Length: 300
Picture (tube, rainbow, N blue to C red):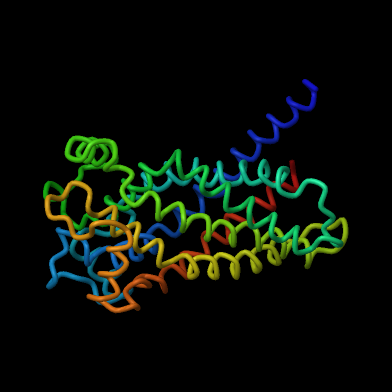
């Protein structure tokens, strides 16, 4: 019994290390695209981005940000993102396998295909929701830092710690969890597709007893990350708009339903997908995470 427990602990720690390392590398590579996506997504709810300063699209952001804030500003919020993303992705991968043991126990991959598929969806969704509880304040800070368009002393927040301290002082700890419940809904949808479809596709396309090569795994991961990202994007837009309310006296949205309703009424249904195209490009990073993680597992 103790031997089995030791093995499980070791596997859990290996999942934390390999998943987190792969995530940190890929996220840094696509950080400029990440900031483009966030600026387009939340600018209508930002008190620092007035109507005359709003960005028209991806290229407008890529041209204006280096010009107005400096080239390094394309990576603004990246440190918070790496700090956040390491435990998020690492915990997702680690918990995913733990939940798979619960949801997939006793199932035959070939005889119970749809039960196996549903189990993968459930394990992926549960993993994402569980890890979100631990790292939400870091995700909140990353969003607010990326949305800050000020220069040097004109910035709303000086850095990660300053952001967290100011929001707690103005709104209390609850301010760091603004939009949490809609985030849980969105993360379940995203992670269920992200992990569930990837693992199921590997099972279908890989020959018996063999693992997919790196490029095949990356190709499948690319389709999965783009698809799951678009599917859950409206939830992501609502949660980030809610995040922008913390620290403000003028409240734009009463709750998440009111937020979704006002976005559609005032900006149109397409506003729920602002920044979605850059999110597709950003999905390359997510695909790399899955493929690199799968490759690392071959050597462990």
